[in-house]
Every structure is written in structure tokens, then in C-alpha cells.
Length: 363
Image (tube, rainbow, N blue to C red):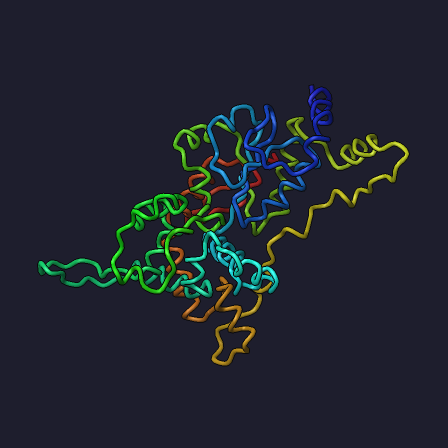
């Protein structure tokens, strides 16, 4: 039986060796749910060398996507870190190449309003916190109501809202065709261009909950074998998924994969085993977390890191406050991650409610 399944995997590897972001999931393939600004690119590149897969990226998962998958791999990341990375990914102030920033500034950008409001993720986090902490004031009828948010505060809250901005904006942030129907106060309209391009094509508002929007999808997912890849342990988790698949007869090992690919190229340069190592170019670097930026004296470079990266281990009170504001707004994302951990093969929630790797599947 194992040899038969390996032969089936080998027969499909040629088609699966290239990255596929198809709208349709092919029968019997491993499904990789690639949440943006995780290490999903590395996961897809590596897994596709050993088995056949379908990648779901930049669209919600449908229940039918999961019907015949032998394993569903979900690539996740700490929600605050993912949002910081996503904000910087499209921001001209987040370290992107100057040429790219100039090119994008020369044409209308889908998320132009967001970046018109906020030059850095630090300023974005401040607005998220200000929206949540609005003081209550008396209105004309002498009733206490929350202070009317500024337009930029409203936009910041919308981008992180579980309902994709419906409550804050009156419509999903992706539905720019209906943007003209918005009725905003003069205060909300101030300081930003019109809503005609208010359509998000980036990862900021597309976290794990967005990919698992449908209740039917979540019900179907609970019935499947689910493997989590956490960005902080990307290589370890991904290699674990291949090992689990190999034990089920659904994936090749490294030697079998090398031999198979070389058999497709008779008379040509043979591929070396090192070409099947885990890719490094897509991985998220956590090196900047080694430095603490809590001191009174900081270099301009350190100040820039604080403003655009918000390091998780910083002792700077401003960074701690900003990360706390983002975490509060993303509470639903943490809940969804813990829900997923509850039935995944390789993670468990510890006594403090923190997801931890679980290697009991190896026994």
C-alpha cells in the first residue's frame, strides 16, 4: 500500500513542483492555507518538492476545498507581528525600495487612504488605541456617548475589525463601489483623500479569521487532519508535516525526491540533495528581536526600528503600549488561533493559554 501511494505522489510531483495559487483545489492534494505575511512562501516551496499540493492564498477557504485533502497545512503567525509586517510591506516608510515607493506614489494606490493617514505602524497603532479608548462625552440630548472618532482612527479600526470594517465604515473595506454611500462627519472627512480608492489588496486585514470566514469551512476543517506551521518555528514545523505525510505514504523522503526529479532529466545536470533543503529567502527574520531598545539614549536607526517594527521584546513603554493596543484589537485572531490549536496534530494550548508544539504524533 505504501509503495502504491508513493507511486501516485511521484506521478503528480511534476505538476506540483511549481507554486500554484489556483482558485480550484485539485482532488487528493495536500492543501496549504497561506495566510499573508507568515512564512507561507517557504512552506509551499518546500512541501511541493515532496508531495502534490494546492495553495489557498488571497481568498477565503471554501468547504469544498477540504473534501479530499489528506492533510490541511495552516501557516500562522502571532497576529500582532503579522499586522506589523503587513503594514510595512506596502508602506513606503517601512523599508521598501525607493524606486518601488516612487512608482506606487505616481499612481492611485488601493490603500492610499491608510498610508495617507499613517506614515508608520507606530502611528497606526496609536490610532487603534485611541479609537478603542475614546472618552465618553455628552451629546446635544445630554446623554453620554463615545467621542466621535477622527476619520483616520475610523480607518485604522476598520482595517483590524473582525467584520472587515462593516461596523466602523458601514461597508466592508473591500467594497469600494459602495463607498460613495458613506455618511461621515466633517471631522471624519478631514485629513484624507476621498473614499473612491478605499479597496484593500493587501494582507493587513486578511488574517486567519478572514481565510476561515465561513462557518461551514470551520466545520469541515475540524473533521480533517490539520497541521499548523508557526512562523517562529517555520522550518521545524514544515519538516514535521513532511515527516507525518511520509508516514502516511503521502510524501517522498529527500532521497526519493532527488532520485525522482533526476529521473525526469536524463542526460542533464543532476540535482543535488542540497537543492531540497528548506528555503531561506522567504523566512521572516527575527534577528532584530535580540536587541533591547528601552534605554534613554537611542540612535536614529534604533528609533526607526521602534517606529516601524515595534519589537516584541522591547522595554520601551511606547512600544509596549502600541503592541497592547494592537493585541486588544486582534483578540478575535488570538481566539481563532487557539481554536485551531485545539484540534491540530502538532500543537496544544498550555495551562497559560499559549500554543506550544506537541510532538506526541511521533510516537
